[in-house]
Image (cartoon, rainbow, N blue to C red; front, side):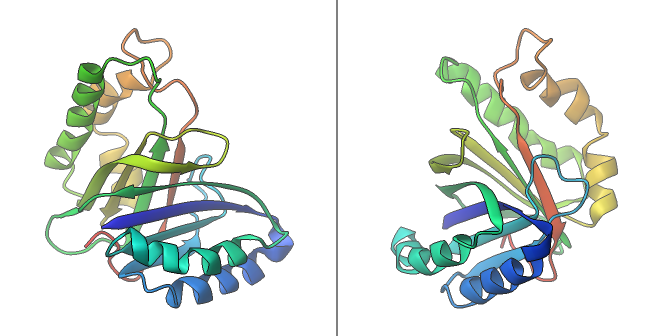
Length: 207
């Protein structure tokens, strides 16, 4: 699938207007799956509105791109971060109710074998965290915003507690994966801020 994620920073007075316009645009985009929702307050550098679309292929996105870009041109939108990328999700049991995306940038001087090891460790996390109901790790094709994002790691969680507790506090997270992000650790390869964004989703996204 061809995936599009946009994190919108929106001035408070215009958020309802922007959200309505974006939802109308994505509903007519031809996307197989999509979500356009306000972000949870627990998001970090995650914008005020999270938009994610999944298309059968890149050409379907190109057909819908101008309509979405028109909605994103609202003057209340002050910043957009995001990425386009390919990938197929892995589903585990019943769908979740929370969609979460993590945009990150691996330092460009990182050796390929180190990047591969980093990706492998991220992909092991769903084995240990049973609140993850679906997930996908992808390399970015086109980055949007001031950061040259290289990866998108996204999940469906059972609920917000399943993200904030069993996932973020699990030993696999803080004892294994966090070293790639910690500037005080010699293994660090993610040297810029990440965008950690999540929202409620009434329908499955990663399916």
